[in-house]
Length: 120
Image (cartoon, rainbow, N blue to C red; front, top):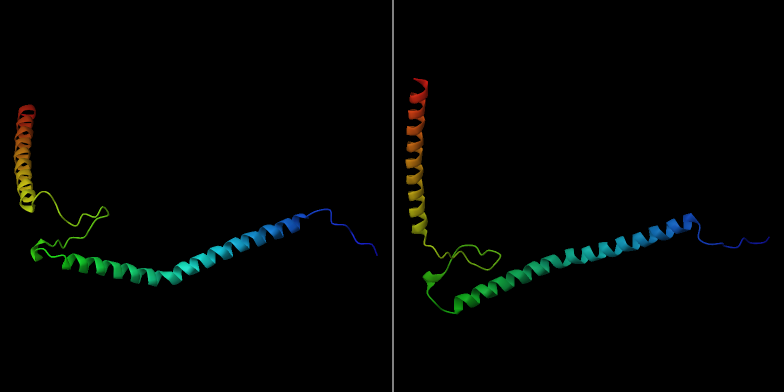
């Protein structure tokens, strides 16, 4: 019985090749993610160790104990230090409240004057 010659890939064969290619990509991605998951505790431990080492080196460098900032560091490395002292912020808030109160009283006087002038 004569065999048929393969004329090329049929749509079904193409689909199977495409699916096997996708499957291999997904499998590679899963392996990569599995490695990341397995390495996560080790990386976290290394980060913790590095942070502890940095803290200990800063503590052993010397300096005044009162010169230590307890504020959290931001993404630029500033550790809770401000150029303006905290007292100045309180002073500005107090001045702002006083100005707000004066403007509110002035607005109230103007509204009362307008109401009395135009309604009576």
